[in-house]
Image 1 (cartoon, rainbow, N blue to C red):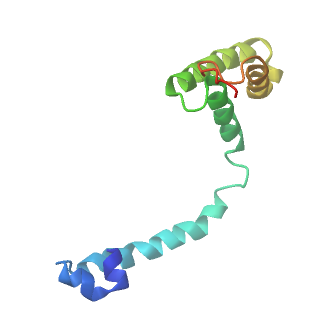
Image 2: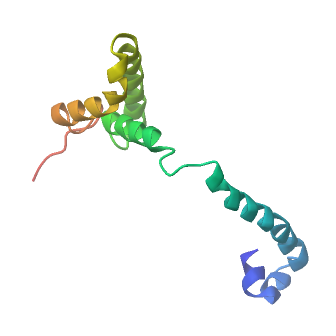
Length: 119
């Protein structure tokens, strides 16, 4: 489809019918534009900030680049969050930051991270 946009002859020489390839784009583009124009009505700038911060904390707690560590970090976060909600509900939103600081101070490579050798 990209060759049809750049050089119509190149796509046609390859056996692509330009009209059939480009027509769906002209049908879809106005709808996508209208959805993009209406999106600010249903969103806010800080809409995913809490989820992003929690996700970052879980990944760092588990260890960067280790899927099993991230799973373990998520379990640690989830269990401790439920504990905080049950007993100290006013402090529950502070939990990702507390866990992140504790893991970075005690074990900077994460829960399942490997220790690296310094030169």
